[in-house]
Image 1 (spheres, helix red, strand yellow):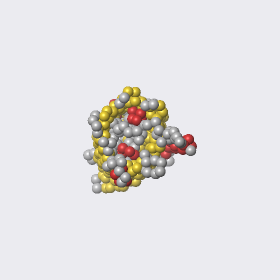
Image 2 (cartoon, helix red, strand yellow):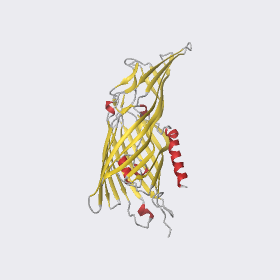
Image 3 (cartoon, helix red, strand yellow):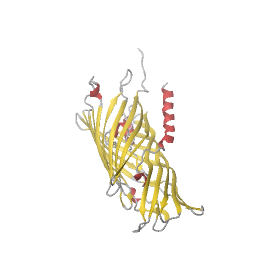
Image 4 (spheres, helix red, strand yellow):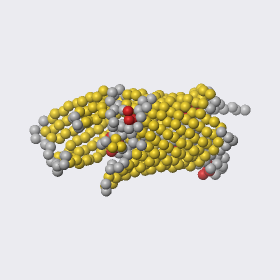
Length: 429
């Protein structure tokens, strides 16, 4: 039965890429860069502000630092899957619009392969693209105008396989190697004008099939009778994605019906950035966990494909992105691990994070993001297992920048962690 269940979980993991391409955003900001970057946390730490670099707990799969995989015990098989739904309020001037989205979020699994060696695999999103809006622009200082429609869809995801090894007491190292893939389809169309007799459409597309490499280390120490300290660090290798980006221009003469088109292709158009992070956590009496993370992604050194109206060319342009910095603080509290009262064994979580933008909008910095989160980890108790957990969390994300659209997102996340003792050997006397 366990072999059949494991095969089913593996098949579900491999089928998830088809669902992972469904966008879970309707933000106009997703047209910039590689889209709206996905939250890389999971159910157990999403209510903690997304901290994870310094977290080490064998009951969960923590893909944010692969060194943590070595903490999984030899009897355990962990499977974790999550879904999310959100409502976003977009505000510009005195106008407000609400947008609702939802999606299957992630699926990961982990187990002990060898003594002091843990393995994990799964599918997680990297970024999402999805928008549909209209804009009106005046031509210079005249009263002439154009109305444009902007549409886009797509995103990027990664299927990963990782391992963590405790090579010395207290010291662990690990890696994630990922198949990185995705695409986007973006269109800008002039739908009306008081001066143009032609209909002009620009379509942008790209497809990516590449790899991604991430490494992590952790050091854990019992600093006194009640407290355990864990320090962690991660590095992600940046590189070109070796893809081709295309811009198709179609011009329709509304009087004669004649269509003219042109396609421009750019090779090696996209890259993912070098990144690093550091984090720390303290666990007090196995009841209270406090964690702090800092992450940086070096987007500022990367070029980006875009149409340059100054020379009427589609080309790689520098200075359109900037380095992204993020700080997160989170807490997890269990009133009593041994209490018979159900509410005393629930995990209560809270967190906050702040991130700077990684792209520019018409020459100015994009919106920064402030996220407040809270949640519960509810133990699933039955006759044979009290280790699995239902994680429910809520997030409020505020994205804003001067003279740009303000976004307020309320998000509900549900994650189910199965923590089963698959590898125990039963003895009958």
